[in-house]
Each structure stands twice: as C-alpha cells, then as structure tokens.
Length: 113
Length: 115
Image 1 (spheres, chains in turn orange, red):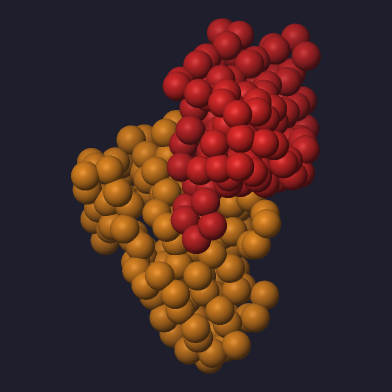
Image 2: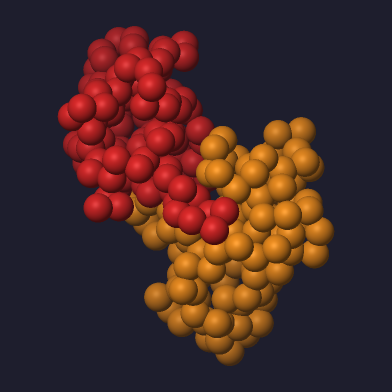
C-alpha cells in the first residue's frame, strides 16, 4: 500500500465552525506533513511530525491545530477560519523527515464562507 | 537565498516533442533536487530526483540534467504525450538544523502536450 488517504475530499465551512481533516498512511513512514496549496501556487509547508512529535511549525496561525494520534494518522483541526484560508490542504508522508520521497495524498479542497 | 527559480511558467508542446523545464538556485547547501508532477485535483507525485554528485539521471522518458557550477538543473521529457500534461514543480532540500530539513519548491510550470 503506497497511498496516503485524506478525508474528506471537499469541505465547506463557515467562519465559526470547527472541523477536522484526516490523513492516514500504512507505509510505515515516520514523518508526516501538512501542506497548504493555493491555486496555481506550489505547496507551502505548515507542519511536520517526526516520530509522532511536532518538529516543525511554520508560524501557522493557531486556528490550525495539528494532531498525530499515532504513526499512521495525522489530523488537522480547524476553528474560526477566515475566507483566505480556502485552499487545497495536502497531507504527505516520508520514511523520515529528510524530505526525500514525499508521498502526497489527493488533498482536501477547503472552502471557508 | 532559499529561493528556487523555475521557468517557464507555462509550456505548450506537440506530441513527441521534448519539453524542457529549468530551475536555478543560490543556496549551495541544497543537496537533494526532486521534481514533482501534479495533475488537477491530485496531490504532487515524485517523478525523479537527483543529488549534486551526478550530472544526469534518467528514469524512463524523464531526465534531470544538473549543472553544479551554474547552480541550475532541468527536467527533459522525451517523446512527450498528452498524458504528460500537468504542472511540474522543481524543488530543493537542505538541512536547516536541529534535525530538520527544508524543502523549497519552485513556482511550477504548467505543461500542455497537444496531439
């Protein structure tokens, strides 16, 4: 299994809602990542978990809260988002945190109204 | 200094042509250079990658050429097909300290291969 599975594929939420994005991989990878991608732009790193510990937080607003319950799962909790947070949110994993051979999921397309 | 400059922004070639996408960097600490391919509605997928100790790497129809002295690298797609139409991102990685690595993406090239 060489897939990174993300749910949901699409999400529409209001600015007062709380929602969560989920990501799962069963490749035994020890590093997992959250990226944000705006249309026609490259992915921007948000968070990195290495061996289930948060190792990088790229100055992301606190309305985004990551969680890594175990080595196969990664969540992104969303609260009080702004319309400018609308984007494709990508999860990725790799064997370790050296950024080599990242496997990306298909993403969650988020719209904030 | 952490930038990776990618060109062109968009590229149209006929089937069978050889599109070439170029990237340039300044940071000599970069030591791993991957290329990612992204189709609409999908996440990026690793296509091919190279380290600076080799000048060329070929995998199937995809070739990376690397010029360490010029700090440039490029992707060539041989015998391009309409199915290669996608956005291509170059990237560069370096160690940023405390066990962390930084991956910097180029801005992307939208390739269209017309029949």
